[in-house]
Amino acid sequence: MIYFDNGATTFPKPRAVVRAADSALTSFGANPGRGGHKMALRASSAVFECRKNAARLFGLDKPESIIFMPNCTAALNTVIKGVLKSGDHAVISSLEHNAVARPVEYMRSQGVSCSVADFVYGDDEATVDNFRRAFRSNTRLVVCTHASNVFGVRLPAEKIAALCRLYNILFCVDAAQTAGLVPVNMAADGIDFLCAAGHKGLYGPMGTGILAINSPVLPRELTQGGTGSASASLEQPSLLPDRYESGTPNLSGIAGLNEGIKFVVSRGEERLLQREIALAQKMYDGLSQINGVCLYTERPAQKTHVPVVSFNIGEHDSEEVAALLDERFNIAVRAGLHCAPMAHGFFGTREQGTVRAVISAFNTVGEVDCFVKSVNKITKLLNKKVAIHT
Image 1: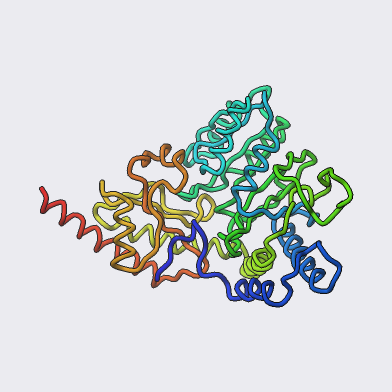
Image 2: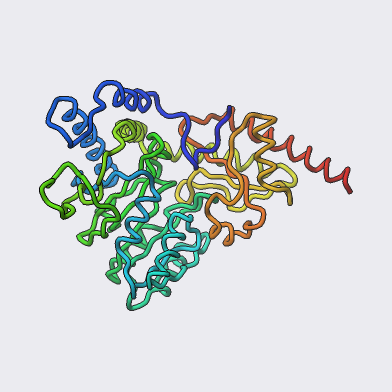
């Protein structure tokens, strides 16, 4: 199969990731932090190594600032529900995934108000100004995606962070589509919270996510329970990372994630992005030559996009196009709304959805060529059907 569904999860994973996850299950699968024997200590060491490498990747000097979560959504929920309280105001962008939009909507029922700052395509200053105009005296938190999971356009996170610092507002970045591709230095950029998926651009197993904290203001924890520390007390530990890591961690996932992070570091985020954007450009250029294919953004560029290409064939259902790619050409993409109706509403594709192809480190020029040829054949097939019926 040719796999272009990397926005949902990257596949394949680096071999080192598979070996590490397997080793955690077969060689040192004890419960980290819950025992003093050799296997438990080895498990704890593996978790700490991943914590240390993730902190370094995001520009933090304290490994304990890295909190392991089941996914990016859990991390976002922790920040949104843990920071906001009744009477507070939040601001989000017009391109948010439901991982942000739904928890914010839930918080409305808890007495929190929210405003949406419109993204302005191709104009970072206007986008930042829209965030500024959305601020109120009770604005407590800004949450925005670093890059749209549907259209690949990037928001100016560093500039929004500077704006939030100026107004003393907490800032959270949804880095689900950028972690491992777009370099981030939380300390230098003044980002308070960063939420990342471990299984996408970081190439870890599914079931892994990261909440990185760079703020003296800590969200309320959403779960209390055993942490392997301060066990005599009924109070949840206040220290990081224990405050947010109740229950047994995903050892095999974290061990695999560590190798995924090492893979990204060894390749270099900027080099990975450069190569993947070049493939996305080739795909975009090929699709743009097919009569009837509609593309929704400008040609992907390294400074303004991640390697995501969304398109439609005329008025044809995006799910039908994706199904034909799968059934006839063994090509995996995603179609529909991609859990991001806000972004589709912004780009005018909420009714039709889009077909989305996302590049990873393991895709090739040959796969992109095959993809473009396949879309061309499907376009001719669908146009022929329309001609017959009319």
